[in-house]
Image 1 (cartoon, rainbow, N blue to C red):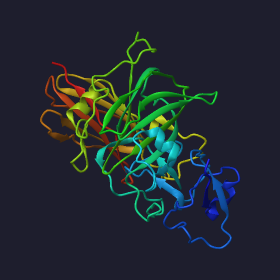
Image 2 (image 1 turned 30 degrees about the horizontal axis):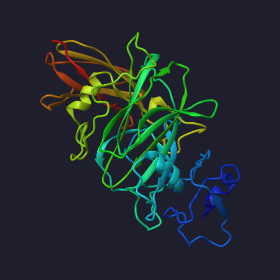
Image 3 (image 1 turned 180 degrees about the horizontal axis):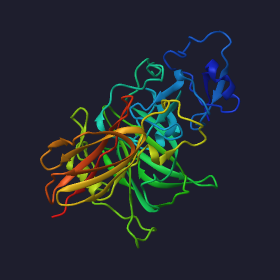
Image 4 (image 1 turned 90 degrees about the vertical axis):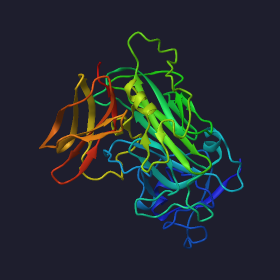
Length: 397
């Protein structure tokens, strides 16, 4: 196999001996090291594409914090991995496996709070924690023909019940989720690997989750030609009595379209009725609570003592009311945002300014037999804000 030679960063010397990060000769990070700009005495490191170990620590100039959303993360939760890209002389692959096997890793580490990226335009590229833009060997931002390889441990949130879960991915272009088994092998959970418009790829098997489960997963994703990007991981609990050896299909499994699940031409993009119908059928985007770092002590992108909103749950509904509960890591206010999916009307519920960590809110004035979405909003005493992902429900007739 052909070997590639790269330059190491001084701050990375210690970890090189333990974690031989694989770099390509022409890869660099603006503000860190450009090709031919290193000082005398830089160590040359022979590396192989395809092996991507994770060091226990990365300095700010090599840390990329969640590039697609301004999320808030706990120190021990999220996904971590590598950014890779294709050079000009490489084939324009159309399957995720080819990207992971052949693309070239950038020498930065990428941290995600969660994976909730609605279909949107993407031409901004990737920035490090100290504000530097990551460039390819042509001094260009990376926003097409790139891949991500992320690792995490799946867990249940406190609000989720043990049982069998079906997973799915809404992605543009290709993606795949595999489970890393104790014997070193991998087993596919979701294979949505081909280049496509935003497509719902559903799991080929269900997974069992209980309070002790910490399931090692690898999530891979590639973005082909510019400009749309999408990547949202969902799951839903399966009903009692279902056969876990069979893949239970949703009517949207295998369906695709850049405006099928999200209005991709709106900035920021907005969910469509079909996305809200997924939520109504029990699908839920995984949150920061569902991801634990593998072999990582903490998330360098997380702020000290952030306001985290967790365990958001629609507790009950009547023809005219919805009862919602959630928790916050700090004392904070309570408020709801309600959207009538049929009319598009958005209502901001009255603010409950009493700060607390356990929140319960009943909102009245709904219409019977109507599909709504709801999300929780909280503000701490110091002015930090947090909001939940949307949940959908239909009021009874």
